[in-house]
Amino acid sequence: KFYQFDRYSEQSFRDECQKIIHAGHDGILLAPVMGRTVRDFVKDIPKNMPYVLFNANVPDINAVSFIGQDSYQSGTVCGRLMHMMRPDGDSSVIILAVYDDYHIIERADGFRHYFEQEGSGNAVKMYSMHRNSDKESFFDLIDRIFSETGNVGGIFVTNASTHFVAEYLKEKMPDRKIPLIGYDLVENNIRYLKEGVIDVLISQKSEAQGYQGIYALYREIVLQQPCERNILMPIDIVIKENLVYYA
Image (cartoon, rainbow, N blue to C red; front, side, top):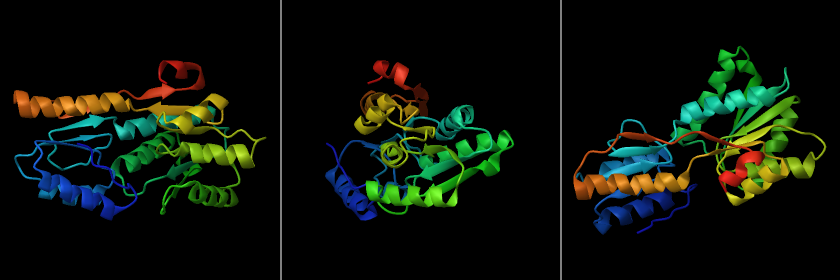
């Protein structure tokens, strides 16, 4: 059974959590996109109901397993890629698209740490979204970024909302090429990757995560066998030239 919620509404998430707890399921596969609210939820999960996290990890909670990428290392990889593409002396901009999400913050930290190691940490500026991540919100934020940072040499978007930035660059700055890195092979991101507006997408193998998550619950509940505490997905770098093998 699927329970869907508005990822920008804590109340929507809480409402679904209550349904799950009272439904008497044997196990839960959970995408913990709201850190504080998830911690509250897992406190209410009955001890005989195992749960597995996928896509994002939350430290210090007693999940049977976590399936996903090493978010910090993923951000570091993106930092290196940006360093290769960004003109010397220009700034990189991080757009923290979901500010209350542990794995999103870890990606940003990994990205910044790469540039700190390279001795150019102050050339990274971070901006956060505090409203719904829709087109209007992104366009307002990017207007602000360019008004405050004149030498933007690259933009790193920490989730699948990369296509909003690509749309802005295509509409408002068609004659200026700015390296753009983001996540996930969703339809709009794929389109802009093909057009060359997005340079790199990091694939998280979402189908494999879901499969591994259900299999971890199967091992725990049906086979009563221990499963790996952390099942890490590869950090796949997808560009226009190898997209055919992923989408």
